[in-house]
Image 1 (tube, helix red, strand yellow):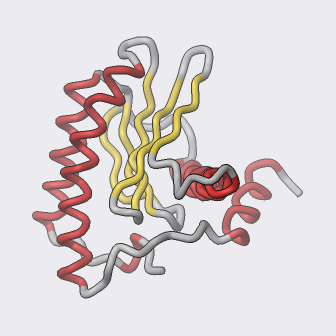
Image 2: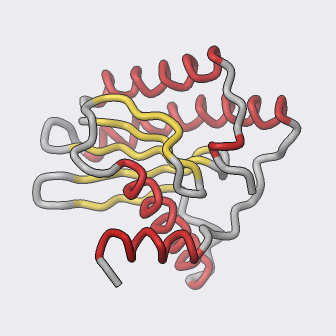
Length: 163
C-alpha cells in the first residue's frame, strides 16, 4: 500500500487539508492536530509544535491503530473508527480518515473529549471526501487496511526503547 511519501499532493490539496485542520483547531481549542498515514508517516500537522519526535509518534500511532483494528476483529467488530487515550494532563483522540489516514487530536484541560468528538466527526467527513478525491485522481482506491507492517512497528519501538 502506498504511503504518504508516494502521494502527489497538489498545493490546493494541501491547503484544503490544512484549512480543515486549522478550522478544527479553532473550534475545539486542542493543542495540535496531526494527520498520519497508515504506514506511519506524518502527512500534516497544525497547532503547537510537538515536544517529541513526530516521526516516531506517527509510526507508533499507526501501529496502535492497527493493533486496535485486530482487537476489534477479535471481539466481532469490523473495526474501531476512533480511539481515545486519556492521561492525567494530556489526552489524544484518534479517528480514521478514508481508511488510509489517521487524524490525531492532542489536547489538555483547555477542551473536553465531548467537544473534540463532536467536531472531529464533521472534519473526518470532509477530509475523507478530500482524500478520496485525491486517491481517485491518483488512480488508487482507498483500500481496506489489514494492518501496519510489524517490522516497521518493531523497528520504531526498538529505536525508542532499546533492544
